[in-house]
Image (cartoon, one colour):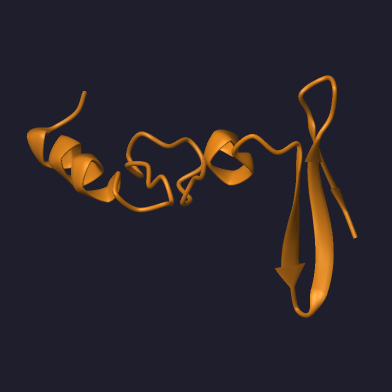
Length: 68
């Protein structure tokens, strides 16, 4: 069940590059980014963390693998 306020909040946040889910609706209760937004048309992306580069890729089976 969604209130009008949460629908309005989602509409205004859709302009952001990060998909923010309503914490009441999210089972993880954390900010969420869809893999489509993260990867676009790529199958692999780089993530820089503490001056190290990590590779996140989508496998042929559709799973995610993170390598250092």
